[in-house]
Image (cartoon, rainbow, N blue to C red; front, side):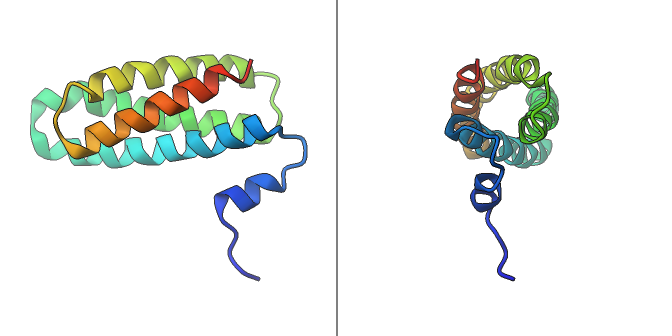
Length: 120
């Protein structure tokens, strides 16, 4: 069997709307971008501590939100609001740094926050 992409897998979950499918994908992308950004920030000294902390928060919350949507959890909407809040806070922090990984991460996070907010 050929390996399925994330979008192929998500498209098979029949209870999801197109918006929910997109949100799962962007939450997963945000989690990955934040893991990368947090790791890359460790090379830039102590002034990056808040960026690392927020990126780690997003990675956990965004991946959890994606899983809650996939299983049609009753708590998905509440978690989506939290995810949007954390994404916005992290994007604000990342935008303050000139590193490419921070700027790219901020772009993904802004899109993720918007997607999570549109779920209600």
